[in-house]
Image 1 (cartoon, rainbow, N blue to C red):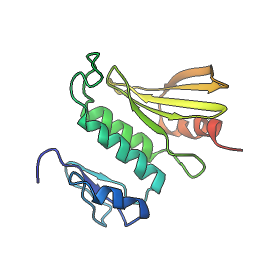
Image 2 (image 1 turned 45 degrees about the vertical axis):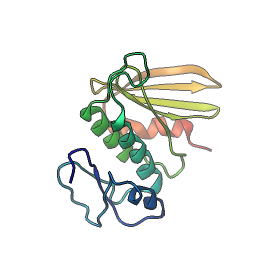
Image 3 (image 1 turned 45 degrees about the horizontal axis):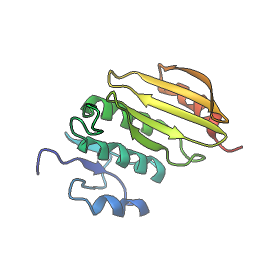
Length: 157
């Protein structure tokens, strides 16, 4: 196995055919993982899709946006995956997953009420709530338990 491969460990699900088409991802049915593996066991399809988008960002190299932006750190990717694993997405669409120019990863849910959650390069998690395109509140997230109230903000009523 090449060093840059990532292994996804998950039960079979409809969306997973996308992972199987890539030579960088591998699947098994076990909930336990080894080095360089990401367990998506017991996650829903939306969470798996968001994790897939995060993992794809590993391919970004130095100056990926032609403005000198750094590649993403493994720690930023890992913390982003941990965040997605803690986001209950039953009532939400899959977030837009966007690399930031300063080496972070941003998750966006839009609509009349919008939410942006960013995992910064130094491991902090920050959020911005918007209503009708205008900022309403921004702060940092100290614990994943804070995600529930934030996600209710954008959940359809």
